[in-house]
Picture 1 (cartoon, rainbow, N blue to C red):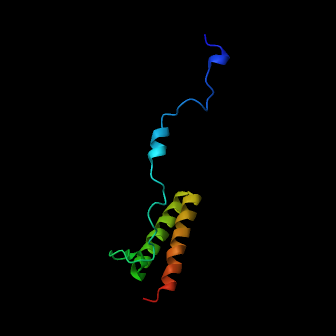
Picture 2: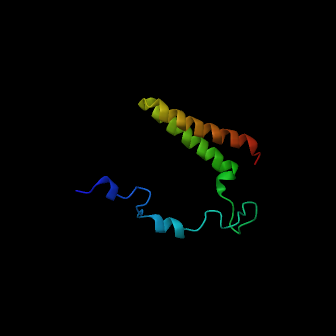
Length: 93
């Protein structure tokens, strides 16, 4: 049996993942270039026809869940549908 004086304090004991953390690169090592063109086309979710399709899809999912009795999931789908409904109003295309 070890005496309390022989035990190392918890802070002095090495942790198993310490080496991984110390060798990890900082998260902000790369410069953020959010406003520059990346050479890839933008996602099609910005287009009005896809907003219409997503609106109808989430509205159908919300109605199905409401009929099944799950009000929380239905409300979540209604909020998604509302988002796409608003984005359809913003895009005149």
